Image (tube, rainbow, N blue to C red; front, side, top):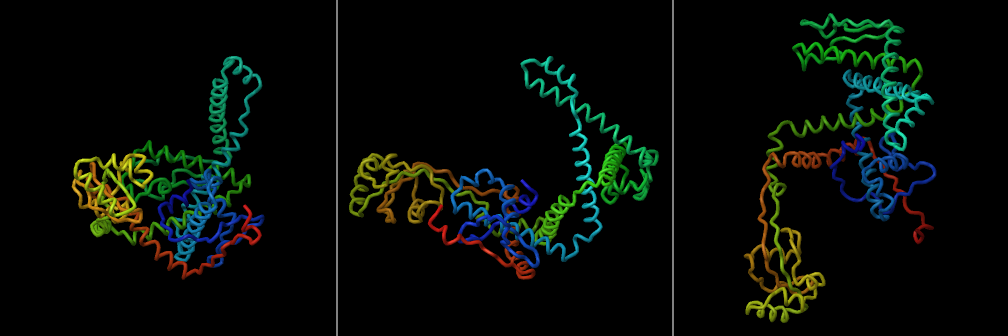
Length: 428
């Protein structure tokens, strides 16, 4: 799942966005305009393709496809609104965000450069022949041997590459400076256009005391390797601007959402109060194992009720007389029904019955019913700690709806719904 989907997982979207399926066309269509930014059909297709439902999408009917695409489009709009608000508040101009983007960029360059090294890992013909001979009739063994060879070869090439770059850029490591009294600006590595300070690898505000020196050295070596490889990748003109822009477009909405969540939930007391004020959230309803008989007239139901009271079995009579197909097939045993889930009249009657007690005649849209409760599982209430995450998500969703409405009014949102062409209405 992508970061964007993780950010908006659980976001409740009210209403369908479409009266007909959105159809992708040969050229990207502008589906929504937010301020001066557009969301196109290609972006929507990519979002659907990256969702957990991607493999099921083709098998869905038209209505379900439209619903899924509508939900994904609404999430893209929410992300764009949050991004615009983050930019309007200058999140992308802060020193911390710039450092984060620079770190991410170096990571991208490092991965691209190292991937190119791996692609060059070719097994010599004589070595490959030896492997096939050693693991004759064992393709899994050959595959494992090839993988191990490439891993060992890559390790050696990687080390040789780092040593070569250290020499090229005149890198010097100052491990002897890792002692008590280190300052944030203490230089631990420098070279041609490269520098690492203690503050680059340790946040002094969070770690005021000197961590384990060996741990610091390990972090220094890791950062030095990334810097060297990233510089080499830069010189080879490796372009990661597209991936970097994608990350920015995901990260800014996340930062905006984090800030709003902090505003909405300043401390634990807010969640506890919401839990107390919404007791229905934590209640697990009672479950009842129901026996039922349904007939067409009140007179017939009354007559059957009298027979049951005189000793006949509701279940035998249901098998013979019930007009409910499922009930007749199962001799009146309709299984477990959760409180509040059945027809209101039956649910209300069940709430007043003792176990094995026969109900009065109950009129419903299905006919005239008689019910009894064979057994029940009592309802209960979940405590705060068991419900904390759920309470937090519900509260955020509740706050999110009006907040997104404010952003829509602030930046302006124009929906361009693609209707089904007239000549396709009767063709599938």
